Length: 155
Image 1 (spheres, one colour):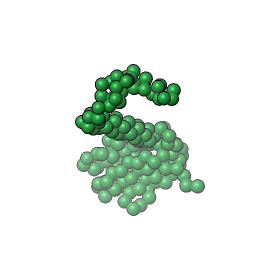
Image 2 (image 1 turned 120 degrees about the vertical axis):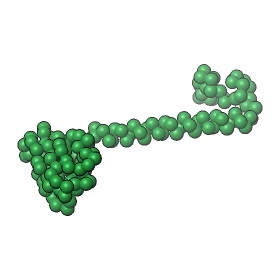
Image 3 (image 1 turned 60 degrees about the horizontal axis):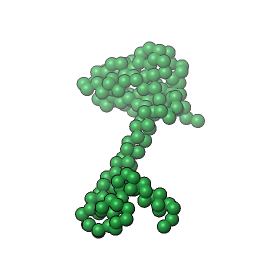
Image 4 (image 1 turned 180 degrees about the vertical axis):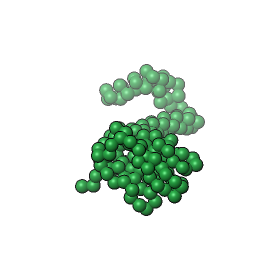
C-alpha cells in the first residue's frame, strides 16, 4: 500500500467517512446495495450543491456590477426615436422631460447616476428600478415606450 493510500484511508477514518460498512479500517465492504445507493445519492447531492453555489455566486458577482466600467454615454429613446445621446459627464445634474405615448416621463441625472423620477405608467416599475450608474444598466418603461441606457462610447 502506498503512503498516499494510507493518508487517504486515515482521512476517511478520521471523519467517519470510511468506505466499508462497519467503519473499521480492517473490515471489508459487505456490498449492501442499499448502503451503496444511499452514499452515491449523498455524494451526488453534495456535488450538485457545490456546483449550484458556485454558479449562484458567479451570477451574483456579475449582476452586482462589480466589474463593470463607468459609462460614457446616456442614451434615452422614446419609441423608435433617439431623444438623448450625450456624454454623461456633459449632462448637468437635474431633470430631463421625455415625451412618450402616455405622457411625460421625467429622467433625473445626479452625480453620474440616472433614474426615472416620475412616469405616467400604471405600475411604476421604471421608477422602482432606482438609480443606475454602470455600463450596460437599463431602465425600461414599457407602457410609455421609454428606454434609458448607460453605454460605452463606440470607438
